[in-house]
Length: 362
Ligand code: PMP
Image 1 (cartoon, rainbow, N blue to C red):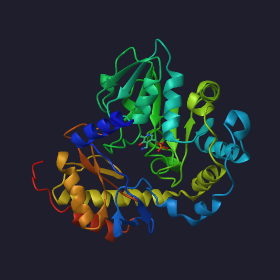
Image 2 (cartoon, rainbow, N blue to C red):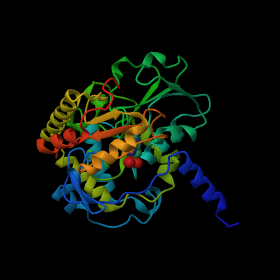
Image 3 (spheres, rainbow, N blue to C red):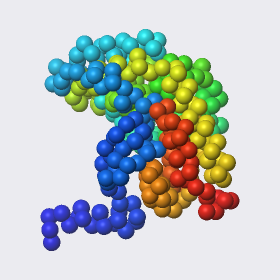
């Protein structure tokens, strides 16, 4: 008997279920290239949708130190104010920073929905939203993916993503009920889609009650924010536990985020859309069924996703299999993501590494 037998047994169960995960250390050699286990690979799974993680001005902006405390004690800095003001200018409504999108979603759902509220959550919502709802005293129902007609009548808060992270599709927010509050997680769309990169809701002319955006994806940095009416910001400052009880965003992270707002251009967004359409067309012509509409290209192959990922790696392309519980069993997939920094030659290489489906009617 060892002190850690119970933990080892759990690991054994995870292994037995084929769900064991390991960390892969990538050493980037450029915006879309890296060394993995000593091998050069073309990266086709990064969230750095515009290549901004390599932008020299953003990297140079990373100045300052730790914030020494939570925002409400010793941790609020001028750079936080500047960044929130820049976001407020962009969105026209108050913004509040969070260390991550995960923490932003925890705060949004655990704070806004109280006993008696009814949250309707899209079936494909990200774990961070689900965990926020689990911390809330409200009831939760799950509605069919991107089908607002399945949202129950007594719903008080609707939760959806703008660009879905695992299915790559975009809901038609104009067809969602307007009575309940609407919270849209724009993690994968902020910086990449819509006017000034404000996301899917802005692209569709919708102003949701709550918008969550992140700096860790198209903005090439880290951290997140929530935008909404003044009451939302005030409430999150006063009652959002994942805002109150954590050390404020480090200054270099906030400075990078601020720089990324000015380094994010329409040309890059157009190039991203073009690259996504190009790869999508090539894969479709090769016989693959590709889900989604924009720069996330999921190819659902079932449990053989792991083998396909190994094949890709052997052909110099890195895109790990997305497995249960991130996606439902049987819906395992390769989730290719495109960057504005991919050249056509890179996209051709990805398409060629994918080859053709072994079972064309899949
Ligand atoms: N929301 C969605 C839809 C996401 O995909 C992610 C990250 N994968 C998050 C929130 C969490 O954001 P962060 O990485 O900043 O914690």
